[in-house]
Length: 176
Image 1 (cartoon, one colour):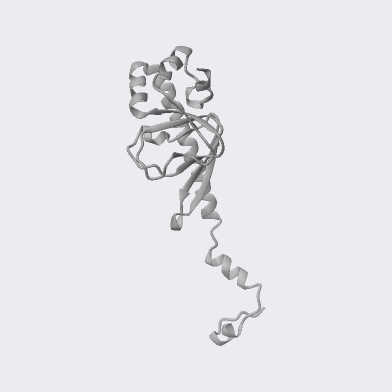
Image 2: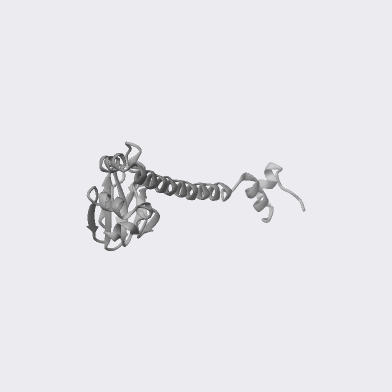
């Protein structure tokens, strides 16, 4: 199936490798709003988006869903579960009609053991995907850290306003 080649991590595979992988994969369709991956569940599936787009949400305070991103055709989600037994850190929901291909850790490892050269290609793309996501998160954290208002910022801002009666009473007024 050439559709499998639309997924970035499978692009570099030969035709024989793709054919070998097809038997390990499951193809699933989702309608708008359906949950593909549920936050806090433990799952060992990697999902590739064949068509459509998904939104990624994380629960904030009071279990309010906060959209943290979105991905579309060719992208993968859930790749960390291939390496670690951990709870999912976000919900992934269909933005509209979505078709995905998913493969479990066990089936992927079976495939990699039978075709190690193909496995190296797949794992290299998975690592690249994880590093790209980590880089994106790091940029967001730097922006958050840089955009935090400091005490010095507040003091400079206060200089633009006339002193209050409390400032005079406490002896903190500044004369210009």
